[in-house]
Image (tube, rainbow, N blue to C red; front, side, top):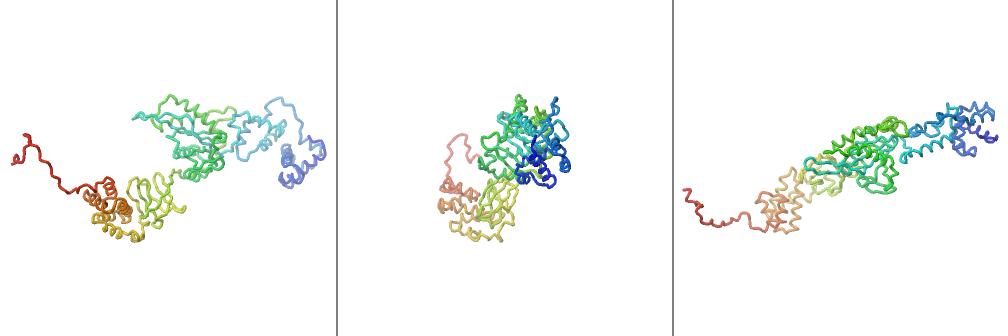
Length: 513
């Protein structure tokens, strides 16, 4: 309690500057040569005592001191103490501070703790909680994700083969609301697919997602500046959230999910230990049933349960899900060939012919192949699994099929004719049996390479044999040369069959007269 007039003068001046002049604590501190925390303390005492500037002017120093510094009263009942479990939960709401909660607690409580005692007792309460719960997480801020160490056996009903299903766990920081599901492995597709389902389970998107620095998600792991791979970064952009990968070998960076993994192992996987599962869907249905029970289990030291805390804290603070679900994509670089097509999994997709010779980025989903040049989409095709075939858009083709003057159909045929009649015929077949002549360029360029590799004479012989077997494709010609079949006798040379041995069972031609 203050005992001198200098302190009371500072209190009055603080109240005047803040309540009447509207100065901040920092400005008051600089003006009165006191710290901003002391200025805030004086204002908080006045608020708790219901003293405004007008009231402060009408009170003497002794009266003001008595109002601000009420004498401590004997506390015979614990009912006067605040509910620190509720305080701990309220601190998770955005913008809520310990000082605000103390002011609300002390405003109508004549026997309330002073602010310092309130703060000290709350810290003692927070330290009594589990280690993983000491951090105060703001509602809707962080989602922690990880895989459990335990796996669940999956039995193939046909072969009897047993594989280990991986268990993914996601936990919201403020409410501890938990999601779990099983995936086949821990690939990039498994990690991202599980997080998509987790966000749909929560019905919203947090501001941050905290994963491990697994190679499936993080392209360049680093203690200070990890870089996610392109698919994971695209996932975060689609949902409008940020990624904050935990430091390697630092489980304290994500204690929430570490604790939830243990709960999932104890209350879900342990209960399923004697059951046999024959499909991932069957296992996930069983996990979903037990997950509802896990989220309804009461907290031991906090009010409510995970489900109720989620409804009160995280659910209102989450951002809404986008209208469209994220579709996992793969990225690959590809060089545009002379026929203005790029290759993916053995199929060829056209791009604008002006991009010939450049490198483009392919974004591949389950349904589409998109081509990007300089971060702009230049082509889009339906994904095809037909190897060796072409997907060509007419707008991508050069005018009159003559944009690439160096390799016109006429020049290719003339080159084949210089090798021989059969080579010219095979070249002509490549150009005539395609929807567009340029689609035969690739095969013709392959024939030119074979001429350099094996010699023009052997190429002509191989083309002759390919025409004889009615398979004038590049693949057939290459196979003939590789196996040396071009050096074998001609297919049309009649072979003299040896006479049949004399035998009583052989009827001979006279039998049929």
